[in-house]
Image (cartoon, rainbow, N blue to C red; front, side, top):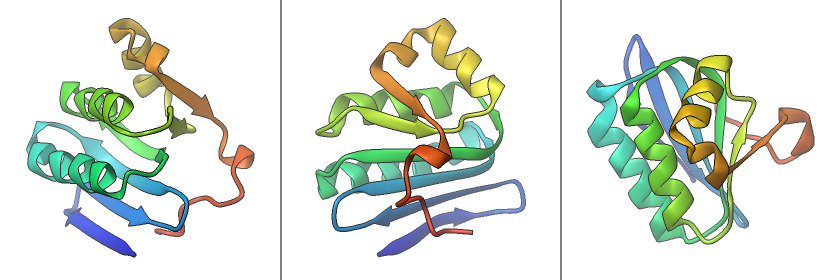
Length: 118
């Protein structure tokens, strides 16, 4: 089941719950303007109670709202949070906030069951 929470010119959040995992795809500028949508994505992942993966391949920019999303997901989902191919800006934020200690960074090639959202 796929649900596009927001689709704007600059950003998109898509949550897809599958049989064995929840995928959250972030696209564009992930900032404070998306705070309600990011909170909704966390809620959906919590409700699904499945391992959660965040597809970060198309993130152009991320502020503290996006990092807060990752921290909440890492602490509220049943398995370690996995982040797929985050760009350098996200890796930097994960490192300086030490939230990177709570997540697993993986390559999109490591998971054959990647997101289907375009």
